[in-house]
Length: 173
Image 1 (cartoon, rainbow, N blue to C red):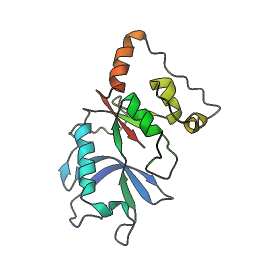
Image 2: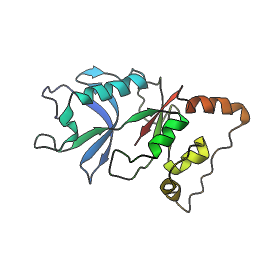
Image 3: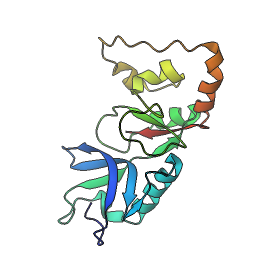
Image 4: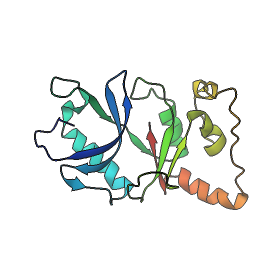
């Protein structure tokens, strides 16, 4: 990212939208030589929002910045918050592809980890009992054989804890 006058490294985890020439920022690993890999999710997301607020032109394409960098919002994982967010217009032009769920206390991990999950919007009612607008239900591919897992009753409590935001964060992406 060339938005900063200093040439110290900024390392971000992003999704690139070629049509919009935009990097949607999911996470931060290093900011101006300050690594945050070993910081928990809550801190990294706070740091990401704070640092991007210091660089207001990050979301603008310009002569020195050929791409926009837009940090995606994150929310507590509660049923009411998720239903509210899913009912709003998303802060990006592309169709919502899915929602990332991060464990609040995990360090940044490359590759696959059970501490970060992904659900398509049409999966939310079946998996988390979260209501979503009909457009997301209609986006389920007709050939999709996926069925929600059968959650044993002894796991209901831990599922509810996650939905109350005690262990996870939601990241629209």
